[in-house]
Image (tube, rainbow, N blue to C red):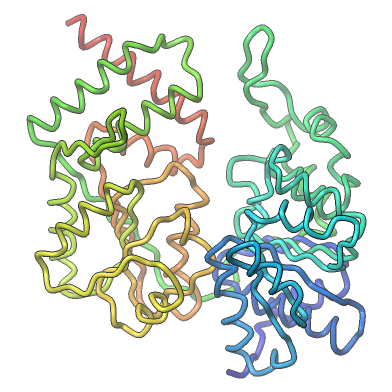
Length: 460
């Protein structure tokens, strides 16, 4: 296919060529991959400015996306891309092969740094979805930080650079400039732009931006970071939410209230921690979906109310294809069992073949987990419906997964169907996503509200 770049794409290519360390914070669907590959080929074969390139990406993206994009465009024929994936032996063998670009999944970043030690060979590193390096405490960040002085160029790509707030920016910017713009340590960054927010006598749980901090941060990084939104550059079809209320029957509602009451009363409202909040929240979300894991991790079925709502939604599609997002393993098992009674062509996403079959129209329902399939997959050719059976607290996962359909090449309005249990934990998740709130803060605050409601009900 011949690549005729849009004006904004050519601008981004030129910025990569002229700016050694750059963050392209481009909205999903704007073509970050082809932009980057075009610039890398120019630097490698026409300007002779770079040697070996490493791309660090989410696992599913590392397996397919970069290689597929290179094969797709005629002008990228010079590039040789190798995926360093699989077992240790397979990775080592791939790294020893002759190529221009090596792609590795982000979970193996530390392994790669340890593998090369002082002989780090990559003078260019591309971090695909750099928000996965947003935490300065992770092993992957610390490992890459140790070899940063050996890297001449860093290109960061993401559509969501700060999904949970401005604090997420520091580690990503550090990998670009070594702390020149936002401070050499996270403590310096916090002191410059934030004030303590939620805290106890001895512990600070969160920070709030100082007045004017957001603008000041954006100005500080504007020379090496470029941000674009798809609605400003592409004529995309509409994006529509269709929230489907799910009403629990009497037995299911009683089971939900019993779990909430018994578990909640073990936790004092004033001493909720992230650990017990996440545990309780997970149990309640499981029950909204229809089953829970017991202490031995056995599945205990509770109700089919959400499954029934899902099947009705599928029926109402009238044969139109849809992506289906599940969250817990027992969600997937029960969905597959329910769908066995239909004549639909159902597939669980596992790799490139499923992507190709979906885009070719050979799959009616493609089931996927947002944490593993939310990045890099171009699925816009296979349908324009997405059904969220199991919800995620993570705004980034939610947005990225929806953008698998709502991107360049989509011909129809994308409709996002969200199954929401009324009066249940599902509503708290939707509120958090709508408010773009922090996951942990949403967990804690919404549980406190639930606790108060339950205590009031018990007193009546």
